[in-house]
Image (cartoon, rainbow, N blue to C red; front, side, top):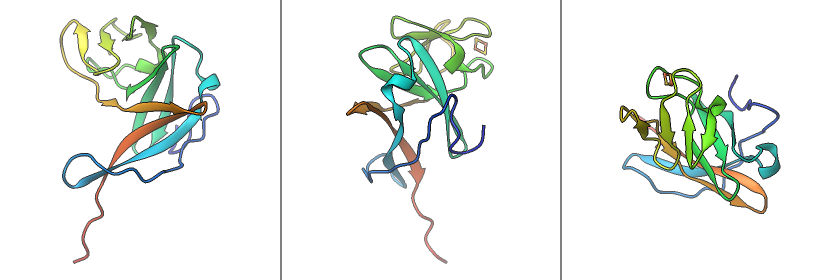
Length: 135
Ligand code: FES
């Protein structure tokens, strides 16, 4: 996938300018898709910049993690979603969706990203480096 291209017809990229995050970084909310494009208990991948992020619909809530399993980089968006967790399709690591932490076995963590739903639209909060000062 290339930047801005998302699995199965998403078109991310709108920014509402929310700030925050670590020193030297800013955060912004990015519109990803409408809620009906991700069926309940399934995940989809989206490319944002150089990152591929997995977005999961748990029915009443959406979660997002990097789309790389902490074990050997398996595509978490293609895993089986169950009980606020996803099982990696490659070797069955179980990842807690809220934190990205591998819980079975307890080895590694996928970076998680805040997600929210407003008026039927899924948004992700993503970090971006602060502008580099001119020299
Ligand atoms: S790559 Fe996910 S369990 Fe091995």
